[in-house]
Length: 439
Image 1: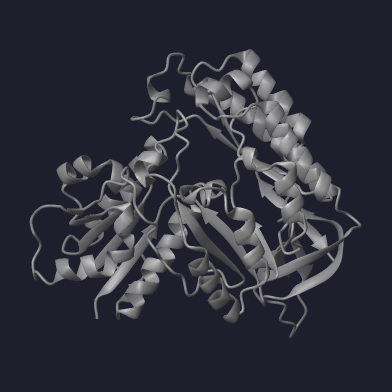
Image 2: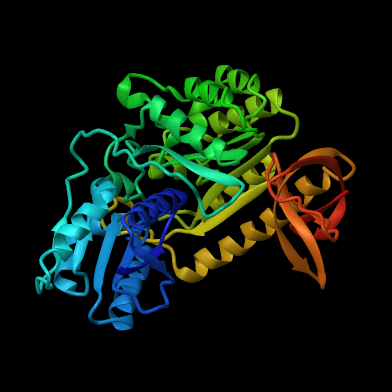
């Protein structure tokens, strides 16, 4: 029995795909071990969203080679897709597998192993993702998390934001068949999972490769599956959130009132340079539609600071817009120059010090907004899905999340097992800055 160590870099889509690859390997009799252990095969699911992600991918590949020089080192995913020539020159990878071939990982690996000896060069299996193609079906039977399952519904992106390499790494939009998604979720529900999170590279585009957005219809189908009590959406483009869209999904009570609307900048001029295809007023209308149909929905977002040419005035516009929206949480990123994108060649690249200063300002704003949003739930009744136990300040608590994705805690009692149960109760205060007390 050959041992395999897997390591993931990148987003929830990568995590989902790694779980499926691990599942496929286990079904074929491979022994899964920790990445720090001596293994016969090392598989690194790579990321290429930034130059830093490329570097981390290379570092993990080299680490695997050092752990066992005789092992077969396999690199899969986005870095392989965009950096095939670099990987071949590096020489640390035995087998390189592109994004569209992840579903065939086991057969490709076994064909390689059947040769009985290394080839002395990198063997690449990479398909050009820039050509139209079908969705590559990968089905998950179980997940590392025991209460929440991530379900991939599409791949690829057609947006071509000026800072982003993903369309070149993942290709054009490819939507998974609804019947395959429903079948997977029914299987997940039968195993006791109560919450699913829909994920993908650009889930707002679900169905557009077949003629139009099919996300509301998919949500309606998922809503009917017995056993699933929560449906959480991954990142949405603000343009999908019309009044009609908000009204439709609000009639599906399993949809969690937690919406991640990608913003990136609160300055219209920066948004145009980013090729984001909406302005701040359109974004704000989307937020207002959600707040019209949901009581205090959790609105989260991503913001990039220090985009090429960002002036002090444009930064102040972003800061003011964030305070206007009043987000629950914000992920603040310093712009990272990514070779191969239009933004990398733009004039006005900011210094790391300038980006760090602006990032610190927005992170403090995020801390205050997040505290204010959580504080608004003190004394209110919520439902918490309990996930696991955690020791905080010497005491054991059950930890879970509300539908808004507010983290909550309740003191654990001897003999009480709350795992994977949904309980109603009130938020009574703060345990820590980002954990609310439930009782």
